[in-house]
Image 1 (cartoon, rainbow, N blue to C red):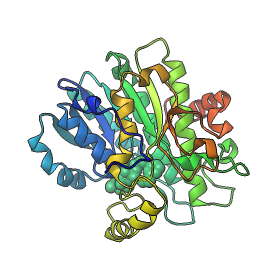
Image 2 (tube, rainbow, N blue to C red; image 1 turned 90 degrees about the horizontal axis):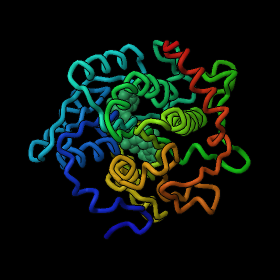
Image 3 (cartoon, rainbow, N blue to C red; image 1 turned 180 degrees about the vertical axis):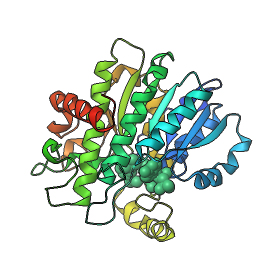
Length: 322
Ligand SMILES: NC(=O)c1ccc[n+]([C@@H]2O[C@H](COP(=O)([O-])OP(=O)(O)OC[C@H]3O[C@@H](n4cnc5c(N)ncnc54)[C@H](OP(=O)(O)O)[C@@H]3O)[C@@H](O)[C@H]2O)c1
């Protein structure tokens, strides 16, 4: 029985022949990224699975041989700028076009003290945002050279916060060096940055055929927060009845619907730069709970074009693109 709270992709889109198309999906070995990848391969596309753990990618892709599409796995640790650069070099040595870039990977630091990457960045922001920023910017020419290509980046309902506490970017301390660290706040801020980036990029690319999207996938009973940890898998399974009771969408397949819509539908490009969201009881704002393709974020800071330009300029410097 389809979950009545989930906005499903038009089934016709999932029958479209994608032969000849090339996609990159980050975090393709797990959860939403895995389901997105599998569907694209089923439909005949070639998917480059950008995985932090190549072995985990190989393991989940074993079943793909029955589909008409193809895949390859390339290592990409988004929390390591050199690894992102190496990934792009390898990708460009093999591919001349890119029909869709799904910046899907994400993580939350499970500890309440900041962890820093070897580049000196707070890890949540690095893995969810800076790494995807560098990846996208380095692949931009290829996206531009491919007709009607698309870029999406996963955000989260968490970015919205509440009426009392709207998340915003703290440009004075993006790396949590002087503020008291809170891992959920760090995650939410990274997701604000992701929404702003999709908006800025859409604006920058408005004279091209590239379109961009940010996505809240809904609750996915994935390995989120686990990084392959079996304990997290068990906890996610045990949590199923609670989330069913709360009417959340509970599977990664359901949560991949929004990404697939943004990558495949003919309607999505009419809304380049917008935020696409599944239903979520976690929206503090009643009118947003049912989600929407696209929908207006309830958080004005995630809609602020000054902040969008600012985070792009600041990040260019941080990742060494100036
Ligand atoms: N699950 C939810 O309810 C939910 C809700 C809102 C938004 N989201 C967002 O949806 C996206 C997908 O999450 P999911 O639910 O599918 O979680 P998941 O099953 O944990 O998948 C996350 C993926 O991101 C990868 N990843 C983490 N750190 C990385 C890094 N440094 N470099 C490269 N890849 C990295 C993971 O790789 P490893 O397996 O190697 O760790 C994994 O493949 C995330 O951006 C998340 O923030 C999820």
